[in-house]
Image 1 (spheres, rainbow, N blue to C red):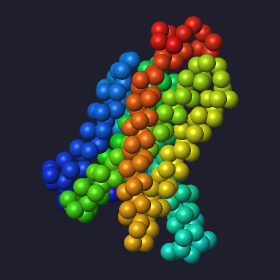
Image 2: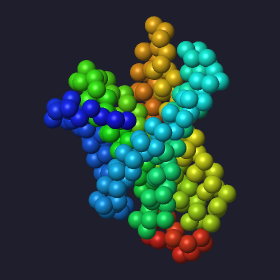
Image 3: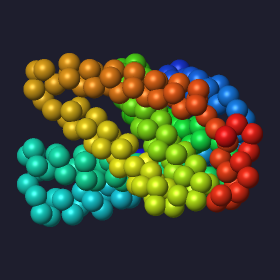
Length: 249
């Protein structure tokens, strides 16, 4: 998305960035076995920012196709828009760049690393997206996005990373069928959650706001428990199929 630079000021930038930075630090601290290099983590934030541009192009193409086939402002149109276009454009872009940057990286040697990588890419995406929204609409949207959109992207990253880390572990075990299954899950699970998030947010019924915030709260609680579970049960990943295990396996 393009950002109107002339509207940006330090207060707006801080309001947009602080929630993402807080969540990045929290997840990085949960990486208990072996910390990732700052260079890798910084590049993942950059990849998340790049993913916003890729997603924007994919969304433009997808929406153009939808507009030619389906009538706008209908439930079917909204369903296809949020589940079929927006969710897969955004989560697919994140996943493609996540895999490109980390799958063969030697630092990817623990299962929890997948969660760290997924969250950093997702929050790089959320950070840039948040700056755009706050620059356009000001502080009036900063608080709402701080407690909904930014944690939402973080949660999508947690679910993506949990499946992604398990996929890498399965590859190390020589279970390539299992690896493929978890890689598919690393895309499908966050995409479905993302689609549901956007679809509920788009509803205009009087009760929809309550349902939306309930959904965000439940997703956030589950994601936090998943972080603790994967962190507490983290293991080193075997480098070669059926090879000697590293300490901790």
